[in-house]
Length: 279
Image (tube, rainbow, N blue to C red):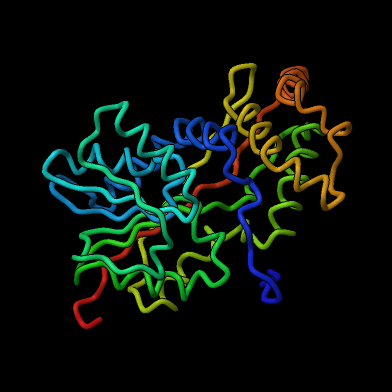
C-alpha cells in the first residue's frame, strides 16, 4: 500500500455539524461491534480509559457505560468543534464519568496512567500508526489494555454486483486513499502492534451484512459520500451532479432489492493486547 510519506494525511470527512451527526449515526450502527470488542478485551468496571480521536463521543460513551460510575473515561480529539460537541452531549445525557479535551494524545502528557486506551477508526489517519501507537502506549500502566478497531474497506461488496453501491464504494476508497488514510489498516493491526513493542494482539472482525429494504448499509455509505463530497470534487473523483446525493441511498436500496441481492460493509477489525511490565 502507498505510504503517502510525502505528505501528512488529513481527515477528509471534516468536522462539520453534519459530519459530527454522521459519526453518531455510524456509532449507533457499529455500537454492538465495539461493545463486544471492549467486553472481550476486558474493559470493565472501575477502569480509567483514554479514548483516542473521540469525534462526537460515541466510543467514549460506550466505554463509560462499561466502566460505570466508579470508572472514568477521557476522550481526546485534535478538533475543538468535536470536543465541544461531545462535552455538550455528555452534559445533555447526564454522563458524569466522561470528559473530553482537545489535543493529540500521542503528543500529550497526563497526570496519571490509564488502565486502558481505546480508539475506533483513528490510527488509519495517523501518518505513522506504529509510532503513534508506541507513543500512546506510554499512557497505559503495565499490564494495561490497548484496544483499537480499524477498517478493512476492501471487505465491502455486493452480490450480485449492484453498480450504484459499488460505484459509491469506489468513490470512498479513492478519496480516502488520495488523502492519505489507510483504508485497510484493520488487516495491518497485528504487525502494527508488534512493531510498536506490544505482544501480538487477539483479533476479531465484524461487518454489517444483509439485503432487502431495511439494511443500514445504504444510509451509512451515502452519509460517508456526503461528507467526502467536497474533497471528491476538489480531487476530480466525482461531481455533485454525478453523485446525486439526495437520492443516493434510495437508489442503492432500490437496486439491491430489485436484484434480490445483499451487501456487506467494510470489515471492522478489532485488536487488543496488554502492555508488558518490562516496557
